[in-house]
Image 1 (spheres, each protein chain N blue to C red):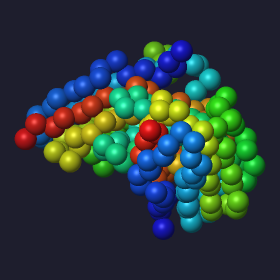
Image 2: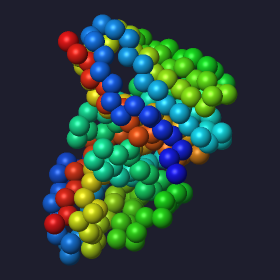
Image 3: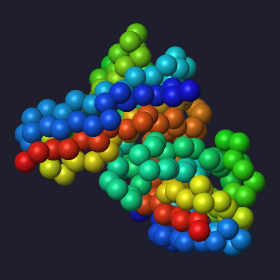
Length: 112
Length: 113
């Protein structure tokens, strides 16, 4: 039972344009959401998070949007850079519970 | 110091071997985790230690045995593994306050032969 899903296994975006990565979840108890970036043979690197009391959080080129009624979140990267090419995982948790549930990942390729 | 350090980076072991994976953090985090990641799959939680006590065991087989000697160290003892246990093993830590941003190490690439 995959509680966090990323329906696009891969995405290609031109350098300088906006990258939009999507994530859906089914467990309505989740109230904290995170995005991680992962290069091959390395551990995931934390990018940005959002709690369910907000619908938007911004950090530099990265913005995360949360739509609680649709159980959907998205990560916007603008402008996209070649170094952004990696696998992106969304993750969800219940605040106060240490367990993170990861999505299936989206491989982002930035085309120079 | 915002690093989680894992050793070794690579490990090849036979099915009758006993080996240990090590993880260290000096961020004062009170939660430490072991995750397992197979190729093209998301990380899967194995164990969580909170305040040096095992708080979550995700029904992991007993051939994997975690140990938390102190608040900075986390070990994973391996014994009688199977080839299907070959994977990237990731250690992570988090502050256990507010959000749960977990910081990950680079992982140990384990191959069981």
